[in-house]
Structure formats: structure tokens, C-alpha cells
Length: 61
Ligand SMILES: [Zn+2]
Image (cartoon, rainbow, N blue to C red; front, side, top):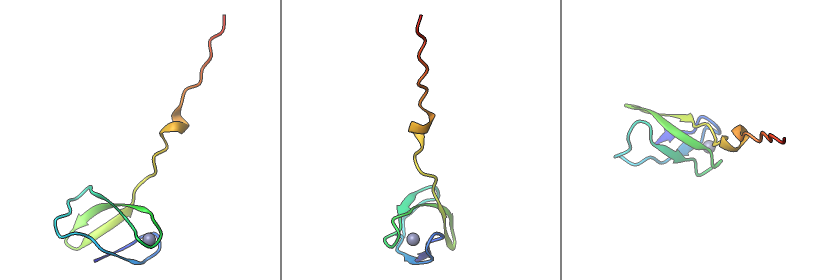
């Protein structure tokens, strides 16, 4: 068990998780990255914000 840094709920983690794995909090649905293993530590993983980086540059000539 680990604690969700977002909502403080108990999050079930598999015994074979690895550092860098992304799991989801059942309670708040946040994506959590495993940042430590002994004890298991979780951090909120940054959301996919790829489409904000979309370059919509029109060159019209
Ligand atoms: Zn949570």
C-alpha cells in the first residue's frame, strides 16, 4: 500500500512495481508515478499536455 499524494487515499500497488511505473489512484483517478520503492513513494505524474505544444503556424504567401 502507498498513499496517494493527491487525495491521501490508500493506493494498492503490486509487489513487482518498478520505479518510474505509472499507476492510477482508484479514489481520485490521478496518474501517479512510482518515485521510490522502499517504502513505496508516489508522486503525481504530469498530465499529457502535448497538444498545447501544437505549433499552428500558417505561412501564407
Ligand atoms: Zn488519489
